[in-house]
Length: 286
Image (cartoon, rainbow, N blue to C red; front, side, top):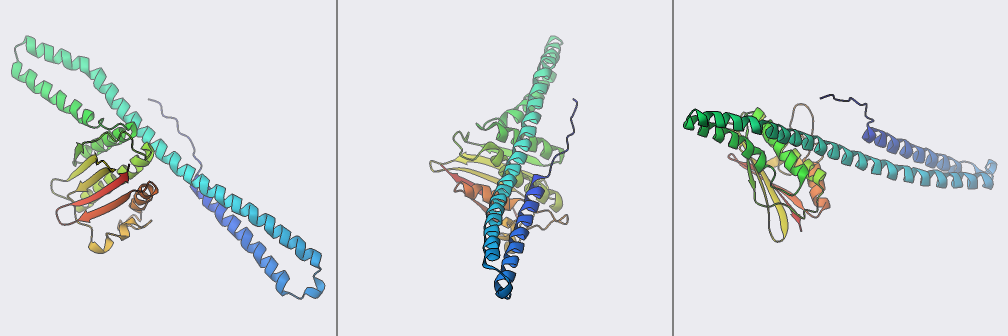
């Protein structure tokens, strides 16, 4: 498959730069007004002060509009990044499904040949191995949100490659979930990635991640737990602050984004951690 490389503009950086420039513009104008107001007014005609005040008004209004648009552009860039990530995961899941479909005829031929040779035990073992492989993908397709299904399938494959067991307990389809698919991917993806990091850095024995998706009459719920090292009690609240990290590479854990997304829909995220298990539980009201 050919991959097209494209140069992307860092919209967030541009947005932050625009905000800073406009703030400096307003500050400069305010300083100019202060100089005029507090200097000797005998040489400063009233008309100049009026023009300066009008200019300040216009520049300030333009700056406010620019800052607002820059903030909106930053949010749009964040949504675009989430959509792109969800699309990549959907592509990966689609590729897996196509591969399984392509291999199905070959599997049937192998089973048929084993049956013809009366190798019934070998045929049974072969069918069982193929079934387990298909079941892993099938168990990831139980929600009504394609992006979430793709995310779970991709994370499960990644965990297997790292020697981590990812267990699924999907008891609800999340049919009318108000949170958009790409935002849910951001939430669940961050939590699973953090669990993988905890298990990898903590060198856990029999590392495992449990992903549970459910709902009650009042809310949609989920829990992502791992059996890695516990979070220190003094960090249980700090981990949700933007930019907080205990990693040597200096990157935050993304939990601030998780909380922000859930709270924007009236939901919440909580954490429990001890020597045996660390679990993040989230709810979104119906």
